[in-house]
Image (tube, one colour):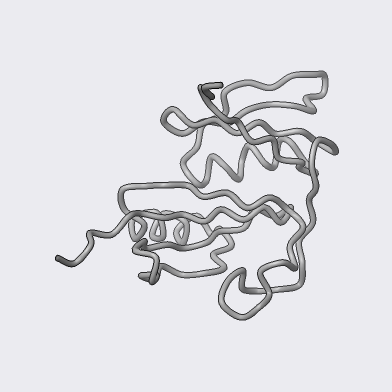
Length: 136
């Protein structure tokens, strides 16, 4: 078997609000389906995420304010996804300006990445990362 791609499907509570949330992060709405829409897709570069209102996966936001580092990682019931970018600090600036829920600010991690976390209102967590050069 050779996989050609993977498209996550996120269970969301509100399709229009989720399209707006992704647009604030810099993603673009690709399409929606249904009247009113209950399914759709967003994209950034060559990456796509499907959105399904009220189905296909779990969702749920915990009371935690952090998603990493203090044992609260599992309080959100949404999906976790790694999103790889060229500049985590620039994404952090954009997310701050857009008022998104940043639950872990940029930090260099021992596994040789710089990363931050943002959380969708339905509890989905995006682990935004960039690889760091190894010391030689």
